[in-house]
Image (cartoon, rainbow, N blue to C red; front, side):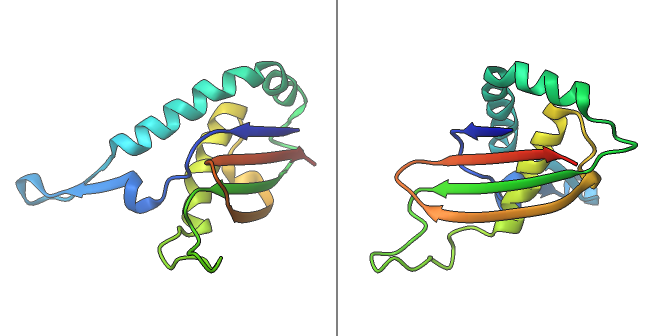
Length: 134
């Protein structure tokens, strides 16, 4: 099953912040992460039949998940076509993409056995996901 989300991936630096009120550290979700999760859920509604089918066939005691994620992201390359050093880390992007995906599709993200991911410079932000239950 393939899915396409028109979202910019979010990194840890933009997702979680720490405050020190009262001398104790407290981590909290940023508005960026809250918006990412909300938008991911809203865009998933167009795939409600596919999600329902996946959930009906997937058994957490028998199956594992293979994911292929392509990130098409604006402005991550310089004029020579080389990745900018601050273009975003794939491992950070995967964290919140997989968390959102597992929540919507109803599987524990610990069941992701294989993960293939790649990033591309593109004129618009798109997260393209292929999910396979094995």
